[in-house]
Amino acid sequence: MSKRVLITAGASGIGLATARAFVAQGDKVHIADINAEAVAEVVASDDNITGTVADVSKPEDIARIFADLDEALGGLDTLINNAGVAGPTAPTEDTDPDAFDAVIDVNLRGTFRVTQHAIPLLKANDDGGAIVTMSSVGGKFGYPNRIAYSTTKFGLVGFAQTLARELGKFGITSNSVQPGAINGPRLQGVFQGRADLAGTSLEEENANALANQSIQSFTEPEEVAALILFLTGPNGRHISGQAISIDGDSYKAS
Picture 1 (cartoon, rainbow, N blue to C red):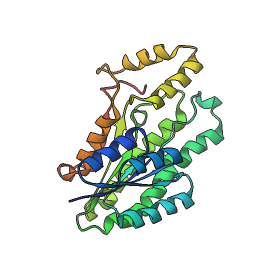
Picture 2 (cartoon, rainbow, N blue to C red):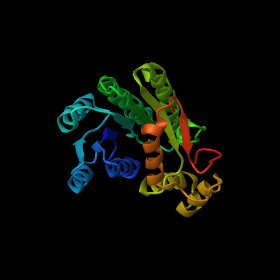
Picture 3 (tube, helix red, strand yellow):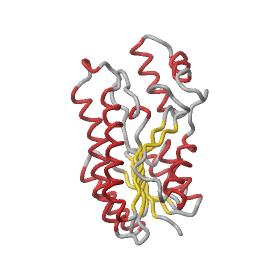
């Protein structure tokens, strides 16, 4: 049976790979993303994907997401909480409090508000539903110089586990996924920020990150998408309340 799926930050990276994977198995997807050009391009590329340009840190934008979702899909079976920002790279004592708050606004408050809107729609389904919330290897280990990011990603693990306990009686599963270093431009941007802070090169930071994991390559977005499809599919109906790593067996946050 075709599912109706909402993916925040669905116009690039893991979000887009996940949208494509759902569509490939016959599902309908609505994406929300802050990048208007990317949303337009993705929606134009596939009749099974609709979209809303939105910033999840703004309640009025979230209301618009769900108005558009209702018009496009008429309900919801699966929520993928993928929206998040990396935030500043700096020691805690030097981190701008406003920059810290901006990460909280997207990664925690935005995810909370989106999920609040989604829960009544998921409860309305006879077959329950599924929620996957994107944490990070930064929500598994302490992450020096990334205090805002790590704080939110640890918080999202507890968020997902709490939802699992609250929503299980309605047949709704809730899990968090903890990717490590994901191959792509965003990863290189993070590494460049670290290189600038440490006075190293981008190449050195790539090598340092790979030295931190037993699998000597970065994870591809499509691999994370495949994990999400499993968790939200028929074989994942009894997996809930879990924080599942897909990080090449990382030994620390990189």
